[in-house]
Length: 72
Image 1 (cartoon, rainbow, N blue to C red):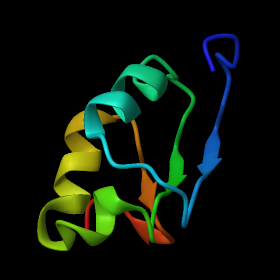
Image 2: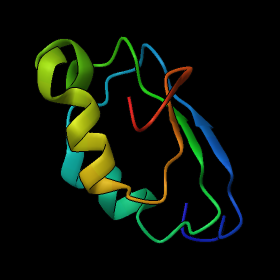
Image 3: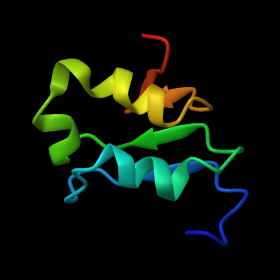
């Protein structure tokens, strides 16, 4: 994903994403990224209470997480 510098949205629901470190490594430099959908992945299902906070920490530029404003 290194070449996708202007990426604005990532829809990756119900895959096998389990590492917030990998999400941050792959998407942290995407300054235009505003929306991510990760619901149904192990990183969401294994720790649903912490999930949104961890996404915000890994990707502070995000405005929307799984159809909900990131601030919620």
